[in-house]
Image (cartoon, rainbow, N blue to C red):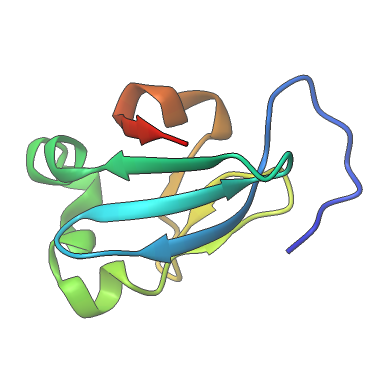
Length: 88
């Protein structure tokens, strides 16, 4: 999804689930960012649905460049770097 909304932060345009609780994000400037959400999912009760890998893989990108799932779970684009494991 490409958003026409201008924001002061870099937005994700694509989220690709990898193994475990890893995601590869493609940012609006084509930068790739890998994120490990293991600590978030295992330590926060509000993310309990994401423990199911089939559900975790339903990740999408919202219009502001954040991550979202069908049940309402979301992660703000300003929080991505907290979970970054590698940048290309």
